[in-house]
Image 1 (cartoon, helix red, strand yellow):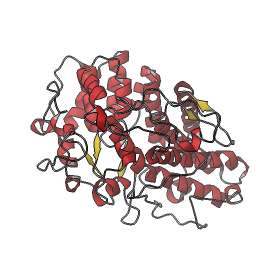
Image 2 (tube, helix red, strand yellow; image 1 turned 180 degrees about the horizontal axis):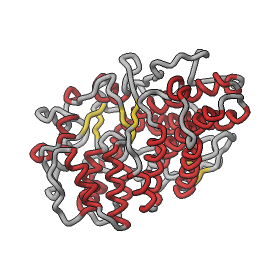
Image 3 (cartoon, one colour; image 1 turned 180 degrees about the vertical axis):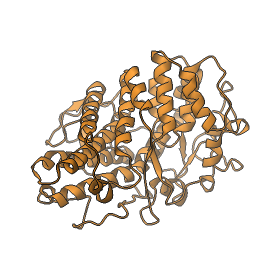
Image 4 (cartoon, helix red, strand yellow; image 1 turned 90 degrees about the vertical axis):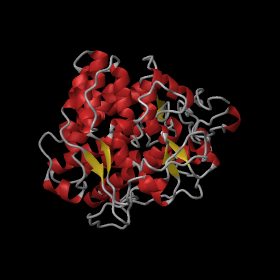
Length: 438
């Protein structure tokens, strides 16, 4: 996999380390071929994989939020503006394969997959405690699955086997199958428990490995349409997992929203989309604690990029050390609810768990799928989920979904970056449903 990255002025790339882990080699993100054949090399690669996942949320969530209409660029880089749907055709810009954000999202996730593949390809020959070996293997299988999820929710097809010069691309169904196989094997690899050596010197304290595996199985089963399996996996999750940050290895979303004043959440997230009266327009009036916890709802500004009012960055309640939950228990409740709504079951009970946690009254409407979509819109803000939701709900004839797809969604997929379509003869043709309105 080629790793050329187009560097953009003004974009902060935070090289994230894992606090509290002592390493016996100098660079946990780039072990040598000889390092990887040793226990210390495998260990540092696992630590580096987690660091890469932690760092990648900045690029991934910034791109996903811009394309799906969750956020607005404040700094008007051409590459960023082409990710967003503008208020008129004349303002829209073409998304092309040299777009630096597409290149970076692709490269970030394939660095994670490379680390995972290095572990899985070498750990079998290394002498170590068998349970520890299985724990590290499970972690690599989870990490690879997480990267695959991030890629297949942003690109139409992706390579699965990457340790070749010109990898072939797999479609969505094949990626989901491969990820579920990896996650099932990961569960088997922790069936005899998780040893202290793994939790104290490899994985950081914010992770719950067993529950993270189940959470990602729930996500993939939901994508696949296996609703009974999705509901069962989601209902079995009992704890959340998160990336942790320090003042020197800060949360990349803080870097984008606060320190660099680069991007802002749209006012429509609070007040309802401009020109759409069928939405539950004021989350503030309803007392939705998720909104007031994230932004200063007293401060709006207009006249930035696009046609929507946006919040000042100073109103975003993020600090350098704010942890990032990469799934939540409330998300799992909404997966159960959606699985029940689509496959049969008491969806309202699980919706009401989420509404109660947000300070809202019990649901009393007649369209439970619409309510699930709306709750996901607020519960999962800034988690790179809304774009995928706009795909999954697009055939459900839901007014707010139809409106957001027509007015907010800029592209169905990202373009394959020039690092692939210019060098890999197996790269598919660019997707046709990009550059809406051009």
